[in-house]
Amino acid sequence: MNFKLFGGMLLIAGTALGAGMLAIPMVLAQFGLLWGSLLMVGIWFGTTYAALLLLEATLRSGGGIGMNSIAQKTLGKHGQFVTNALLYCLVICLMIAYIVSAGDLLQQLLIDLGWQLSLLQCQILFTLIIGAFVAQGTASVDKLNRLLFFAMLLALLMTLFYLLPNIELANFQQSNNSNKVELIQNSAVLFTSFGFMVVVPTVVKYNSEASHKQLRNMVVFGSTLPLFCYLLWLVAVVGNLSVEQLVGFANVSELIAALSQHYENLALILSIFTGLALVTSFLGVAMSLFDQNRDLFSSNKLNTFIITFMLPLLGAILAKEQFIGVLGYAGIILVFLAIFIPMAMVIKVRSADFEQKEGAFYQVAGGNSALVACFAFGGFLLVSQLI
Image (cartoon, rainbow, N blue to C red; front, top):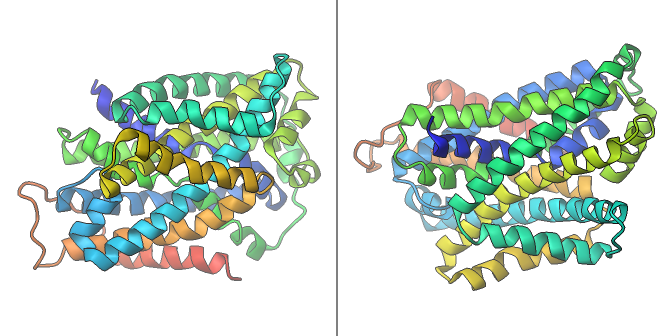
């Protein structure tokens, strides 16, 4: 087994798994299990294809440690500026959302263990500890992510062991909102839940010796694993809680408290599970921003650490009650960065005047028709936020 490719797949999956795992039941339950699941599968398909476009642009342009390098080689200075601006807005929004929720979970966990720390102290502690691993480089993040990912899957299996045997089938028929327009309005939150694209250049560079087919499979399998986890989690939660309860939750602590009322000793497992999901996602997103800052500023690790983590931490302190709202803003930014920017890159690298790196030819299936469909998918996501 190629452990670096396996680690790259888990970095992709771990980056996606996180805030989406927590938000999905709260935003989809009101529309019924079937329609929510169909929308999720459709968005997964579109995001996976867009990620393969970014993989094509990365390989054919010769790669780099961040999207800054890929944009410079394919879109020029103006495209590089737009890409960097979008990337910073997106990643900082995601990091804010993760720090907000992780600080809340860490505080609850420490209270259960008998330690009293303020929310601010928990947010700072979480950021400093995870940031220290990110600063060590991709290999360090890969090893930590493998350990945390398997621990998270174990916690998920233990959670499902409690929840699945006790689901009420009648709950799956519940729906207090038949408005499909409002369902579509939640597309940005779901799209953000598959927001792993920012790590594609990093994991490609980390697996520079892999074949194009291996890298393609790494991206596809890495994006599919979160889909199965999300669907299982949605079924388990909706089957155990009423729609009225789910739509009334303001944060993940309330979700955990409601489930724990029905099952003894489940609170700790759920806290560990959701906490690990956030940590693995935060690792991938923070790693992409750290590499982007190294690529852009060519600074030492200490300065890069400060640039990478201080602004998101400040934002988390100011936006402590805006978890799902921040995800919505991130989803809008992600449409441009993860759909339209890779499309523009691919159009450039497929042009006759682009000088490709020798032996780097790779093209996603589908041709121009698939590009048109991908453009329509991006338009659908934007319209979902305007209707």
